[in-house]
Image 1 (cartoon, rainbow, N blue to C red):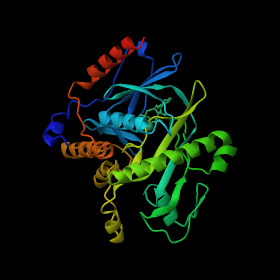
Image 2 (cartoon, rainbow, N blue to C red):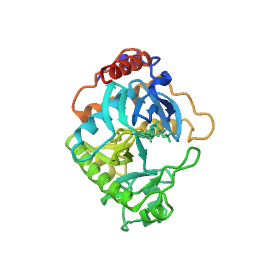
Image 3 (cartoon, protein in one colour):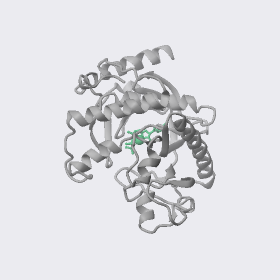
Length: 328
Ligand SMILES: Nc1ncnc2c1ncn2[C@@H]1O[C@H](COP(=O)(O)OP(=O)(O)OP(=O)(O)O)[C@@H](O)[C@H]1O
Ligand SMILES: [Mg+2]
């Protein structure tokens, strides 16, 4: 693990945004990623910036977050290539993936293995309020907070157009409302459960519990259904430490988490839940958040994180130019 002072030295060199010439493609800016889409070539450049989002808003930057997310996701795509086809082509820069452009399904596959969560769309929030049929899944009586479900379930959610909120639904609802075809839904669900089972097994071998995750899938130009965006990162997944999970939950305490929850918590403790102007993250919380992202990378991959110290904005453009020069 790199020392805190090294992270501190990078606090004002984070990657907030990348502006590339239009020759790289049409720009699309998500909350975390800056994309450049070349539709004719069927290709998308995906730059993982250091922006962090919570409560559906961008709340600042975390040193090395983009590099961690990009490299961790690329590592997972490599590791799971045999069971989970993906959009991945290459990672020409620590913070950049070049991918096959896909037409995203209009539903996201959320896979959950535990009874947890505090937001209104989460399974525990609903279960606590008496819901026993959640997104088409029948839930047994008597489950407690943070307990494992009898088996992982899929709770699909729509990918709402910008400005509208995503909503949960059952397979039948989402198909009859026209969000997705039965064929696509069933293929995606099968792929998601298989990938999740692999992720759980791997996480367990590394002392972690993969609690739940969100998958996006899409169809490539040649008609293949593939995983897109990112997989099994601390942004898209909940992870808990396995060693003290049983003791903590038995004592009625929260499991130790290795995901974005830490940052969400900090905002809540500072009186922010998504309304109005967010407080500005101080150095302490930004450094600790960086440590946790790096920790997730190192635990999951079993290799040390090697930070790239170069000024990221310039480096990204240089890496991409070299990549396309070599792959003309
Ligand atoms: N291979 C791909 N083909 C098409 N779209 C993709 C692919 N990979 C990722 N995407 C899209 O690129 C964007 C990545 O940006 P980011 O993750 O920052 O977005 P977000 O804030 O999560 O969502 P939104 O796009 O709704 O703002 C997402 O819209 C994602 O669906
Ligand atoms: Mg995203």
